[in-house]
Amino acid sequence: MPQAEIAAVIGVTEPTLRRHYRCELDRGAAKVEAKLVANLLNITNGKNGTALKAIIFSLQARFGWSKYSPPPTR
Image (cartoon, rainbow, N blue to C red; front, side, top):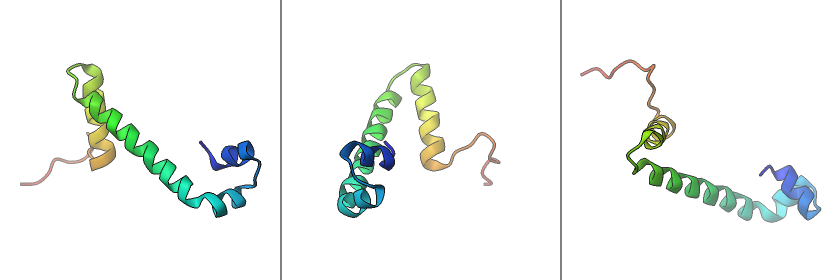
């Protein structure tokens, strides 16, 4: 959720939000990322097309894999 929306909901300005809630904003983003990664890993344990897409996405996003990259030299 954008910080502008969070600030509006609790009735403060964005700089005030960042000044007083910096740790919460940072931890919240890290928690969301961890949960998304955990869900993605659960999906990759499947045996269907969705699992394959999740595996490919994980490899591209986390490890820089690309079908356009040249093959590694040996």
